[in-house]
Amino acid sequence: MPCQMPTSRDELPAGPSLPTRINGPVALIGDVHGQLELLDRLLDRLACLSDFQQRWIVLLGDLVDRGPDSRGVIERVLELTVSHPRTTVVCGNHDLAMAATLGLLPVPEEAQWPQRWTRGYQCEPTFASYGVSPHDIDGLRQAIPATHAKLLAALPWVVEHPEVLCVHAGLPDEMPLETQLKILRQRDFSLHRPPWLCRKDLGETSGPRGCRVPIASGHVPRHEVHVGARRYLLDTTGGLGGELSGLLLPELQLVTSARDPRPIRRGWWPFRKRVA
Image (tube, rainbow, N blue to C red):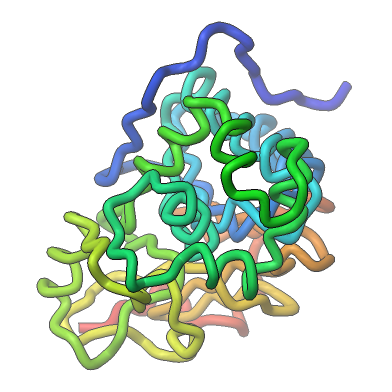
């Protein structure tokens, strides 16, 4: 009999407090992009782990857009914050774009998030999942439940763990680590295009000097998960096909919406190497 995720249909928290500093075993999950069916299959596999109740679930951002059920994904994440309190999420650029467009965040008008989201983010399925015509921002603002709005507004930009830093796109090499962490922790919404959420070229970079743990992110779709000495890259669908991927730490095991956990091939990464 397959394992099933515990669920709760009880009253959801008005505004979930998403932890930003965690410790212990972790399951990192790449970009979901409205793919509720894939997320549920992956969560069912995680629920079969013997230490599931002690394991953190960290979603690496982009809950919405492209896939068919952004509303369902946000609802599932809210349920997880009740049934599995060791759940947290980092904000993705699609999540930021949606929240900024709906006026849920204190972004400057000149950032033009409504135009950017509706023209370049393939957000039409998100509107449809809430029963709203494409690009009807006022209609979406009226249709979105308050709990969904509060979740989007609360998403942190970084989750810190002693063995991994979780951000959506990565950390630039050219900026001191402590400067970046300070901005990430306080979420600077005056930035028109926060690089940690939006830049496409950070997947191949190793991160700033002084970062002694790997950086985990999604953002740029890949054919397979990459696990290196300094970078974990987990977006294997981009919302456009393929299987959703998760990475178990400290085991360094891969689990997908199609397969149970299995060790990562050692040739993909320098075993247990840490960079000074």
